[in-house]
Length: 195
Image (cartoon, rainbow, N blue to C red; front, side, top):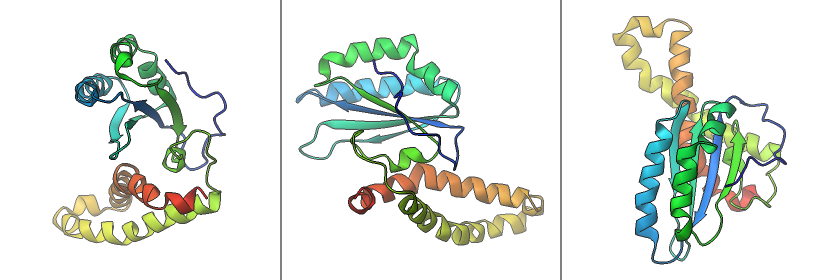
């Protein structure tokens, strides 16, 4: 079992309350079906823990056998509770014979996990690149999302009240960025971002 990286960088100034556990497993050839069954079991087990906010899986491309699983928790304590739980320890022990190497575990705070390259030895991209990518993703959403909600706000005026409207829009933009858009954008521009 891997512990939290003690050499992790200082917390992000952007958002520091949540934690993403990034887990990498390299599966032995011919064992993928067994691993996929196990993966469904451990995802279900993680979902029952306090603070669980979702899972994102990057399956290996052809010629590669490494899975990358990002498990999001609302706080550092919640993430550590899951990592150190008996059920996780038992499940990882069960699948160990199927893995070609020990699992790799990193814990990332805030938005830093978006900008973490697959290799833990690789450098973090410069802050100006992080800023540029984040702005490029959020900028169009701040124009599109309010327009998509306009019919709802006209139908339910209470939701259009100052503060409530902004909260709904902000929550939608952040959810789209964290769970849908940013992971894909970072993979698309990784060659430039980590250069």
